[in-house]
Image (cartoon, rainbow, N blue to C red):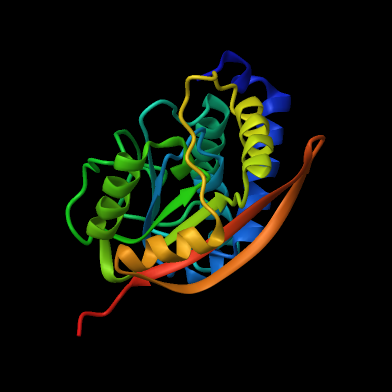
Length: 230
């Protein structure tokens, strides 16, 4: 974790970005009251915390929104806000002591049993994996969700080499990454084909953009479910 992450301006910016992701991805309407969810590649924890807060405000509190990451963890500020939320008695009543249950774990070997969650999410985390690990991560996500659960994927979309270069340059700067860190992007058409290969059905998808000095960055959000066996 980059030391600057704990600075208040960075925490504020990450929280605003998390709000933007949740709003534009449109995943909230698929969350079940009392549901358990898993965020894979959760980073600094802002998305899971905001989802818990938002669903509680809507009167549909989640049981938990756990997170795993292999190289990052929720900020101290995020953890402090979650503790304060619970101390004030506003947190969702849950059997879990920690509704943001975090674990150091790899996406290709999730430490959970089959059907443990109502849904699993990847918010801009898949493109940081190599192709073999992407395949394993998707299979693991399919394994840990219930038969009627959802997989939420929000990713950068790249259609040509110029777009890939711009997207990668902006992404590396955003995440303080080195040139050695691998990035794997897809176009919408490539994602659609990939989902079919993996036995996933697209329930809904959205397209949106973010602006950078280099130009617009294209994104796609996919709500997926397991294909029914015939």
